[in-house]
Length: 261
Image (cartoon, rainbow, N blue to C red; front, top):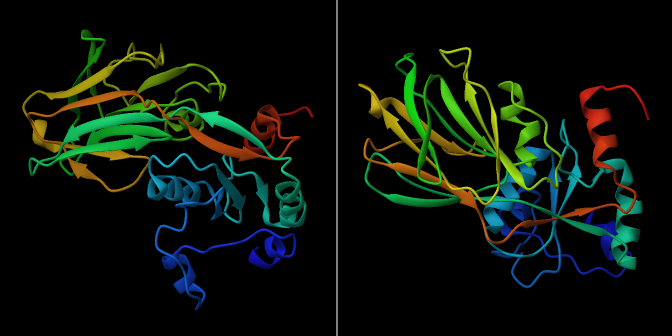
């Protein structure tokens, strides 16, 4: 990939940890001062890249050498074409909504996260259902008895939320979705909310210490029994690079095996 880009006059800097894997010298926080960050892998690698870059406003492009590739711009077979488009400045940039999440873990440490896909509160190692109270803009929505609860962006609607029975949501829809995981009550269903809503989730019941918390499938933390998990739309969206002819619906058809096209 590096040779292909440099052959078109594009300067390439490799992040230090990645460079060490291929026996090269790299740069700490190579994205600082960059015009574009490129992730080589699947959706998981791109998510990891986004989290490492943090709130940086540099556009991110994924080259899919993984398995799924909902978020990536192209496959490894298309890198020559992709590099040419970058050199000409013909790439498209779409904005994807990101969630800002605050929580207090069991040790008492306060955290603030960004979530591109989803926030998940789930049962721990006890095997019991957990009780979670969800509030929307300060008003109680529901008290769930379930294996857990997912709050997902439109981007995340094709990930864990979908596997848990949630709806597919257009990538540019101004909403996010709350989806219970294996709820005790069959009447507990996904709810789509406008994205200016503020969602708060607290652990209830006799086993609040059994609740685990994760963002985008990353590190799992144990939730403090006094913690209120606050979820809202972040002020800065992710800038995701696409090829000019990219179609979200074509991606859905291809990845989900739908007919048409």
